[in-house]
Length: 277
Image (cartoon, rainbow, N blue to C red):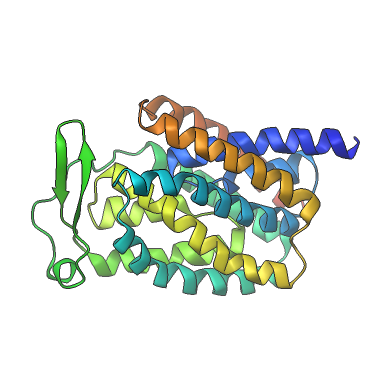
């Protein structure tokens, strides 16, 4: 396969990754890493380096639109980024000394967890009474709906902050945005409406990935020949996804996406157990 065909296939795959990532809040790494390792047999550490840049591009493309529409809770996102950034740097440092097959198996397990979290019942209703800490930190907010502005309050800030720390470690270790855990922290622990959780997760993914990407860049695990078509494709997909989110119900897409990444997860675990990375 020559470099032109390689780049075009990678560009198309990255576009799909960006589209799915922006619609589901999971980031693009869950598609980019299996594509590079299973299809092109790229070393998983270089795949993670490219996936981190994909997460930054995905977040940059989709987050700006969501912030403009007033859905993203920027203050909450920056507060939780304290936890995810600390975790991401720690995870990236651990990854450098972790065997590639172990990373592949762990990646597969996280993919299955992400699939289960994506299809579970979502918290759709806004709370009218928040915790004391949510008022002290001024984290409560509102988001636009066709029926008008809907105010919401937050609970269990400490629990959400702890889950974000784990999300950061996995992001740095596996090169993914850890969107499933971030949505779990906001949607499940803090009881934020689903749409606010996914868009705030998209906003945070780029900041978390940037923290761990610095470590991969210093170690030489970011290849421009791989990263360029990945970033370009993901950015295009993220812009498309941001436009589609406002006019479509992503429920069906979520189910298709979950089945697809479950197959990929089993493939990653199988190859990891048989030391094929």
